[in-house]
Length: 225
Image (cartoon, rainbow, N blue to C red; front, side):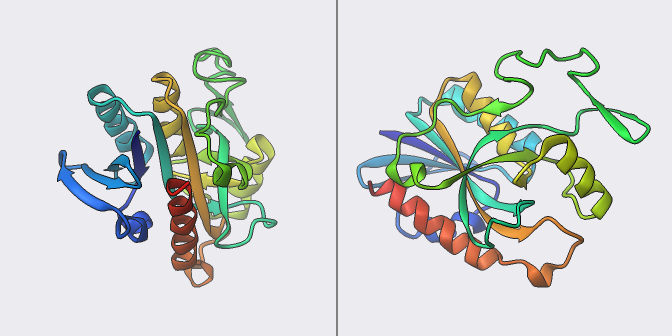
């Protein structure tokens, strides 16, 4: 089995890497490892949807994978999610493209520049209908996310995005990962741990170390199934 693990930063998967055997450096962004008879390419993209999309395209055009995992931390809109909780994001979207119309944003679909069911979208969403088969992943809470260039940190921006998209989480890479996997018909899963609540910025309330620890424990369990 050959698997692709995609993460924005090495920090988010550092505990996992310690359990894997390094095999070779494929290129500047990909290192190859083995674990439990699985060959694993680890792609570190950097933060953001543009580098994620570009480097995913390069990786998927050069290699054949049986599945792909997007691993990282995320901000949580849903206060029922606990800090450090690991979730399975099964729906994601790009909420930002469009044009402002006073207090409202007209999306590409509103502007008739994108059909809401134009592949790989379904009603404007990226819906994972080919998740990686895993008992551990199946046991995680499934949530809807959004992928953004700029995190929401004001009450007004949070209210607007909640009303329009009703997301549970936000990241800066997830939907780009989905887009690439869906386009290449690769089973995949986006697994993230809640590092902070989406709120006016207060890093003292963030829980990044706990989120990373919990995320890596879950993924190690997935890989050892």
